[in-house]
Length: 501
Image (tube, rainbow, N blue to C red; front, side, top):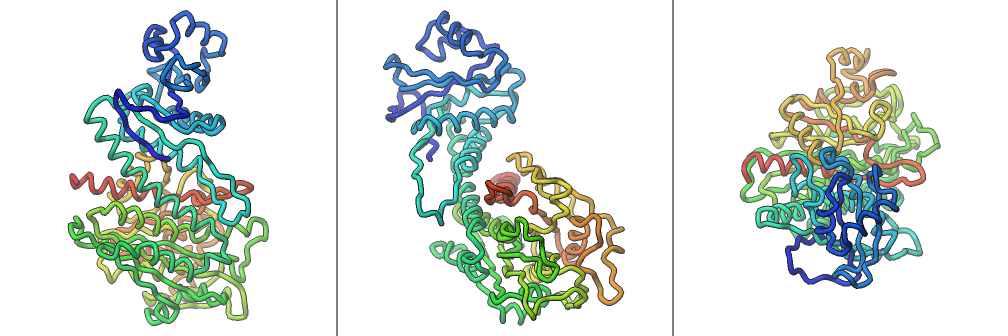
């Protein structure tokens, strides 16, 4: 699907449809001038017999019978004009897209000014349209023998009235489409089953993806021996029950005009299947544990956006990937391991494995003297219990950085919520035999996990995103969501805007 801005005297494509956003309190004379087919009396009857009044989102589908340059027309009720806000705009667009699919419409024309609301900007309207279409029409059919081809909605034409808005529209299309490619990559690779998406497969994907961008990005892969030589014993302890070896990938992007001397580092948890180890998970919905690598998938998706957009930044993406499985070599409750930082950890629960991978990766990040470190992980069931799938959990040691991530969240409607990281959690992690326990007890699991990670992130500004509740949709319609790719891509765009770039 393409989004194309247009102005008057634009040549129409075949199988087209014009969408008109109509407010309930809009004067019928202005509606007549807008639609330009039916007289006021006809419009009045159309609304009267279509249950239009006080029916937000109501659509009227009209065939023009060659009385117009458009083949079909859709009128959609946008409610009362003064009440029309961004959340209602999103509902309207979702409803329209489903209608387009149902009626096999290939080319849509709409005037963006039909959907004006208080303090709204064309840039964000276009971004919303791209995000919604990407989410609604995504499907993963890679392993189905019969694939139904989708032929609807080839192009959306957006009418723009002036040069300033035209440039805003073009920028929104550029940003939105680039981000959607990163999101799609993250979704696709997350949806691949774990017998195919192994740790080795995942790191090879991270390398092959950037082969044609060798000027700005270098990707280095680390095998199990390399990881062992780095003394990432906590990371390796997670994988020791699996026949699949652990791997790490480091994607080093450095633009020649980068605004930051010290790199921004993204770290992703990449457990391609998590059985829970000896602290085994229940069998119900265990198939969804292939999604325990969504943090790593998100990091690669974000790097894809940054590289393809040629952003003037220095960013390093690091993913640690392995399986958490069971055999005679598996990590056991009661074991003590030494992390890369030389802190020791007593294992109480082998299903609290993500923090063991991340703690070594956070220590590894120190060597690059980072400006900022952001880790992304499907880390705790506790975060799901607290926030459900409505928001990702956020923890940070920097109020400024936390504020910037929240601003990006508000921009693109990807909810995050700051959870507490109280000092009282320190005693929850106290061990009789080691420096730390790998779990903090029965309660506050998301917070104690973040507090555990904070021990390894003291030398830089750090954000931890727990995406356990938002990385995929569960149940019959299970599928990866690609979160938080859009969120962090927007964070980078805001960073550049702040620096007037």
